[in-house]
Amino acid sequence: MKGRTVQPNPPYPRPAYAWYCLAIICSAYLFGFMDRIIVGLLTPAIQHDLGLSDSQMGVIQGLAFAVFYTLFGLPIGWAADRVSRKWLLAAGTALWSLMTAGAGLVRSFGGLFAMRAGVGVGEATLNPCATSLIGDYFAPATRPKAFGIYTMSTALGTGVAYLGGGVILGFVGVGTGGRDFDMPLLGPIPAWQAVFIIIGLAGLVPAALLALTVREPRRRDLALAGSGAGAISAGVFLRRNATTLACHHCGVALIVLAVYGWVNWLPAYFLRLHGWPVAKFSIWYGIFGGMAGIFSAVSSGFVTGWFKQRGRSDGAMRTVLLGGVGLTVGTGIAPLLPTPELALAGFALASIFSNYAPAQALAAIAEITPNQLRGLVTSIYVLVIGIAGAGLGPFAMGWVTDHVFGDPQKLHYSMALVTIVAGVAGSSLIAVGLKAYRESLARVNWG
Image (cartoon, rainbow, N blue to C red; front, side, top):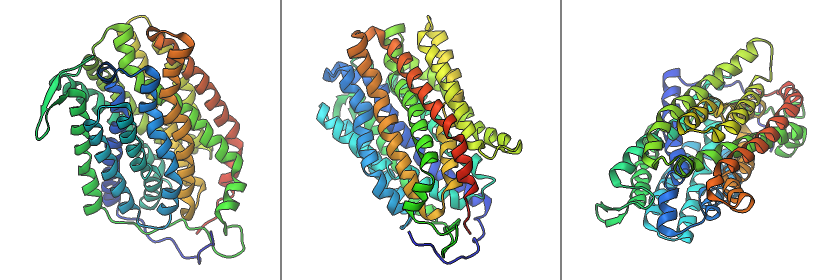
């Protein structure tokens, strides 16, 4: 990419307006994350109704979404660096919401796969657009906290999906099989399908707010023009920062693999191992896991600030590392605890670290990447975490249950094994990449 003429950065938007825009983006992310994980909540009912195996459900939970999420990530990231990001994100939000509702109209593995693929295409707009927009709404000193709030949407999404989902499940009657629910215009349909339709249509609200109330901000932090150190193309930037980006992307992906794996399999785990109905588990985990996840996301920005105040310029990556270690220890132990109450407490405590990596990984990208390349670099990150994290996490745990332990009642061993292996590998990569990340920070030179 050719550099642009050096111009002073325009003033940042008024703080109140910037936080309002962030709130709307967060609301879209909240529904997006609900749409990602609701299939895990409905897994027992879907399996009972359609007769799908754990491996098939792992594909529906993860790979069906992740493959298309990553395939469309790069072109959408390229577009986010060139066209209106707010319109791109509004269109993506509408698409993934309609595809979630569409999952309530199909009754086959192929139909569910297609709808989940559509969700992945829509959500591919989210992180590239949001990372670029947040970088233009907030000054550098405020960005770690803004990214923490943004990632808090995943915790809110988890809490609302589980807590609100538990209420909805009890209302519409989803159990291991469920009963028919009389849906307006459609008549009686299986209750799990009704849940998809209700949540999907609700997601159209933030899509409308994005389109009607959010303004596209002026771009800032543009790479300098000319032949100096600030002039940079995509190829040059990627080569100069190859070690940083490889450790960052792959390390976070392995950490996220564990998170997506156990979040999607928790309802089945509590039903199989502890006999808790899905609705009961949903309400209790929605309360405690949701609160812990919110704390994790919000506190991550303060932890990064704490590191930086003590002279650690690589504070964002150190926060990612702290989250990876805490998560690995917590979720390596939690599924093996003997009672449902202890297991719930273990997963809730582990959730305190669950958003450190995804929140501050985005802050780290914004710190080392000029505006013209943020959408592209974020889309590469999305591609890696989409395949290795969101895609392989649920599938790996289902596959290990089916083919390594060969017993659905040994799901807890699969959860612990996959979490420990992925968490240790991911945290190690982040630790190795700290030096390279500091070197990338030292190269930052844009107007």
